[in-house]
Length: 484
Ligand code: LAG
Ligand code: CA
Image 1 (cartoon, helix red, strand yellow):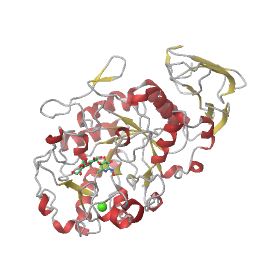
Image 2 (cartoon, helix red, strand yellow; image 1 turned 60 degrees about the horizontal axis):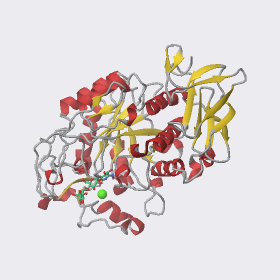
Image 3 (cartoon, protein in one colour; image 1 turned 120 degrees about the vertical axis):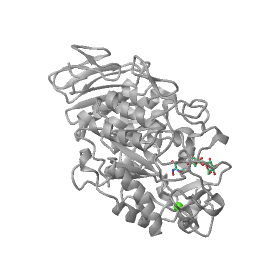
């Protein structure tokens, strides 16, 4: 369950938060496929409660009312078309699976597909679930439960959301029918929402009954779905992420927290010399890594002082480090603009999500940020693909916030997060030649639209990077868009 089954040479997925299926299919064909992205995490595809009383917040999608594939992102047909079209251009789909709970009690009671529920009786007829399918006695998780009481964290309600009993064979079967249907449609894996709130043993039973990935969509025979479990473990809680790594991969929340600190200069970049398990991070193969996610970019979930698109210079620095460094399986966040932390995606008065528009410079409009379309970010995806399994070599630092390193004779990157200029001759590990910096521009024909860097026959290059430049890093590699 720890292999994403990316198409060959691909390494990175992006969370297209609240995107519609038709728009994702188009994005696969016009951008993600051609630019080497490995996959997409999509918002929950199953029917959720419509919450007009809070003006359709983003979090209504974390309140399932059935497993029918009808949401604001589209219907079942649109979903399965998207999966096919994306797989056809080498981009995998990963589904955010909410299997810990159903909706909480609410003053509204219609789903995105028209289903209703009877909250007082724990009755979800469109599944169907009834009282016996939930955990008893009824209880709600409190803050102190995380320190004392694993059983309460798993058997009580998470913010009042009706807590399913995954120990029940009937419940397991409903969940499996849902997930296996998605696998048959060609999805490559799942984010397991709220995994900490389910018993590892029950999850293991569910994972083991999932079907193999669909070979008609290009997966090798016998391939198991990629599973990354959302377990927030910043240390000191009664439940440890180590209870989940024997099952499948785990979201590494400490990763984005530490890098956010470092790139905000609350820690010197030079300490990243031993970035990885020595920092208390998971084993690389167990870790789904990211800077921000849909929760902590708006102060939900793990919280912390996390970099987002709003502090773009530092954010691009942290993302570039994530993509340049060999540790982990990276996921990019692609956001809609927000100030209100509860607000849902751009929509019209009927509540329909409005599509992103694409500007001439490749950026998005209509309220969509599309971090994945920022040149500095998508060019670093190609950097990571080009670096492949190459080891990190030739670490250099100035004893402060200037660092540089190579990836296996394929790629080189240097960061300057100090308040003074960088002026150094460094070993790049690349063959002699002129390379285009893929941060300030790219190669266009036989010239660079941004900076160029000349590597000598000894592999060394003079790297001058001012502290006041637009971005804090320069990056070059042997791929076509960097090498002249
Ligand atoms: C998750 N991971 O474990 C999701 O990443 C996170 O976004 C989900 O919470 C949560 N678990 C449940 O799937 C989000 C919001 C919550 C919201 C919840 C359900 O962060 O704020 O709760 O989705 O929509 C909301 C209200 C609560 C209310 C609850 C039940 O904010 O006040 O009690 O709904 O109606
Ligand atoms: Ca639970």
